[in-house]
Image (cartoon, rainbow, N blue to C red; front, side, top):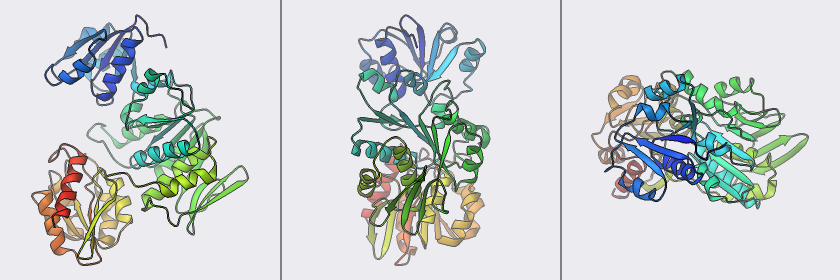
Length: 446
């Protein structure tokens, strides 16, 4: 991709947009960076980009900048149906995402991991496995650092592992991972997409440019994933925690078994620190990605055994009077809450927050079977009460602290208090991390 002397517009100046603007200016492009936030809100950004030949258009977007560009690079937070992007596309302008831009310059084998839930854990674990096997590895994408930072650094790496969101996949054209993994699919981001099918279609684009020389690691237990996997061009490598597979990776009788091309590797799961049924799936997906790209089984599983859970995903806080308290603030959709509920019995569930538009109905059987008390908070409480409130003892709390105090009063010894919201945090908190810290502080204050 030739960038020198091209007119390139960067839309959105969050972390990804800043990295793209810096890289493009460094390549000699004529860069315009635009964001609806004004100069005051973006003072730190303009300071960071001082010294680069970048023209800023802040507090507004100018249609002329879109229509006069040779290339438009869109940040993930900017929706596809933005009127100026629609206009630019109709005018034949080339529009790409940051991952598309970066992928044109990455030569090392790329592992791209997506899914509604578990992609951060899977991506981080896969990166650690590659490093444990001696590969110089870059881990980034939707977590940590943008892929374009690797390109800008000129660092030599042997493997690249990227967490990829549906938003990042919206504007790809040639993005081509050697291994692409789809961990699961459940309703999410219906505040961005008009239909669930639109969201699924965006996720599936991770496989779009693969050939029969590439690998697709897919969840054989997820009916939607498995249905769409049958249409892929890449070689399918399934994983399952529910059934034995002739080829692929599966869990049976306390062992993970990897079968491929007549070889079989067995990994006993006793002593693995990463607990929970969802993490078993994440482990199998990460192992498959790494074993397919040259990692040794012994070194790989030694890494898995010592890997700790990431913060804010089913994280144990403490035990008080025989009751365990777990914080799962990253569970911002129904699919992730399902996995959390599968991991415990006799649960007091604290849920609610900013509604994202999906149905709560998939939680019905697990709430009936495992949730003794349901405590609802936030903007979504009314809707959740309507859909779920009749299934179990349901209470309301005005604050997260009140919910924790109430949970402590009603949960019997041997039970579990689980904060797994099924919603985003933006109605009451800055982000899911602040929500997590407030929960942890409330539990420690009991």
